Length: 250
Length: 331
Image 1 (cartoon, helix red, strand yellow):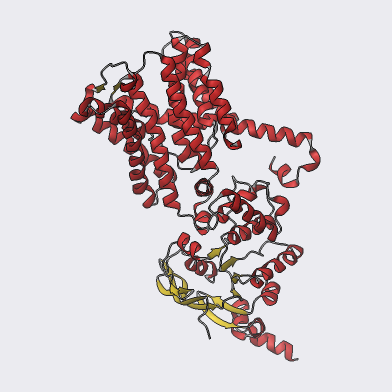
Image 2 (cartoon, rainbow over the protein chains, first blue to last red):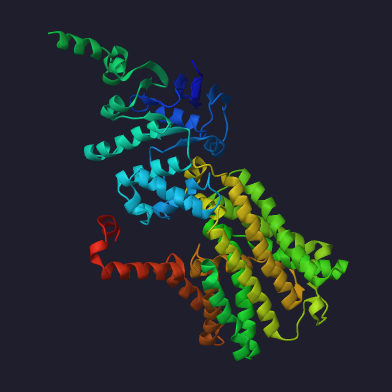
């Protein structure tokens, strides 16, 4: 089997006395959607920030496309083709939607005209084509999430790290954006997504890693994870799996 | 090029002024205003487009002025070459300060304080170092000839500084339309988001500082040639740091014509306040300060920013159907 596009090997991160990520390992196969789930405060976003170079790992290593990328700066990683979105959206609020996407598009397009054309295409792909000339700060939550996605796509990534792009959206908005994510995968982009919306994880991801208290406590297909007692306990508390099993059995 | 036509129009209007106005007082006023506009445009590249508010652009202005004067008087270098060397030194100083401050991650008010410190250190050094003439300053010998970059007529000086302002406007416009400009504005809005999109934040900021330093230094070089005298209080004094940041802020921070408009308005205000106040000492400064506070109060994005906003509001009122909930909510 070929080497996975991304492999995180026993990464640890301490903030003072707090162990945010504790020897976590995960892999993302090329062209697939991998999900990273876990209770609040499990260290998912910290792990993403380590992979994308914003936070340094205290221990462990990260390999991407066959090379060791541990400790590389965010802009270098972006140039290598690793894009991320932010859980708390970070639009360039003084700029229009088009200009926001343009910043990303410029990474692969030197001239303004070709970058503008690329930005417009990405805008259409994520469904922002009607809003391109609006100031970014007038967008709704759903619009801002789409803008995060559009900017990340504009750098033409090979690996896309999505940090809760569905959080805060209503069911119909989720229904609208799930096909967009699926189409990105179909285009050959490898996706790792942090997500709390389990319905989306179930329908999108092929492989799921579960993080709790900084450790990867389980991995498997969505179906395996949904019935894994360890995972259920991590979310619902000690003994929950046994109780659920008992009530199901009766 | 369509993008440059507004610049051409503004320059054309300003270029005919000396043909109509012959008063030396007015021409002198305009020359100084344009010189400040040039210094302000330098600040605007870094502060307006890049969001890095410098309180010490005197460092560049003074370096330009001193290099021009010292090369001529101590080393017999041709004035035009001295002028070019002054601009180059401003760029180099910008690169050096940029490397020192941005590499170490200084942002916001820390950056502002460090730039202020650089300017003050340079001022103190210039006031004691023999090469600058220390407390006496450096006088450029009067030699009215084109070769020595000295002109009998104020009109010629006016056209020279107008040409320099024109170059700064064109450079600014080209930056606005370039990849570098898009990255610079992204850095201003959000450094982390910019880095995530592949922008080398500290490099972009340093490059902006080089361009910014060169422009403001050009203004200093012009000062030396126009007044033929430089001392530490003029060259590295806080007055020019304040003028360089005040003009773009009043005119419209991060806009092409902001510094030019701001310089004309701020300078006119200063003169008007003097007329109104008459002989009462300090009253002109109070009036001047009050008007500046009022402008910032009512139009925090400067005159151009305020005008753009008013225009948008008017458009929205004229076509209520197209406005959307988000914008109404923002008021």
